[in-house]
Length: 165
Image (cartoon, rainbow, N blue to C red):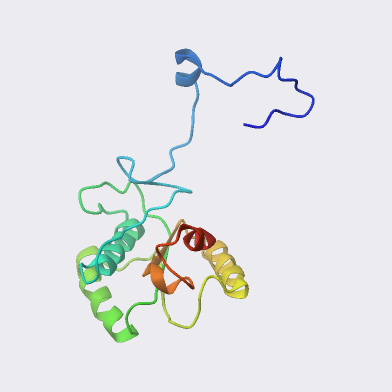
């Protein structure tokens, strides 16, 4: 922790809170998926071996968030706007998956999708355009699938992953 300008080490105090102070604070509810699974401004990574169904799982997650319906066993308190950018499969295959999930959740008014293999988020122009689109759509959640299409280099190298995160 950096000591503020003009504050000497002798007068510097760590901001400990007693029970009354901590419990007296009020914060807005930022829950997106209940029971501590996902809050605004947080990240959720779904990882696993190939061909386990991660892409289908994250598409179901997007539908649940967009419709305000539970995801797996977790409550979704209210619908939120969701963007999916999927790089994995061609549009006809994605549409088939989408139709099956849509049959369960219903048409999602708060969901937009993009299927592409044409860019990397490490490209500054693409990154800036995506930030603009997220802000314009007022998306609360961005689903990027699969991770390895988003970057150059190894998805197992922390330094290279942090460029995207």
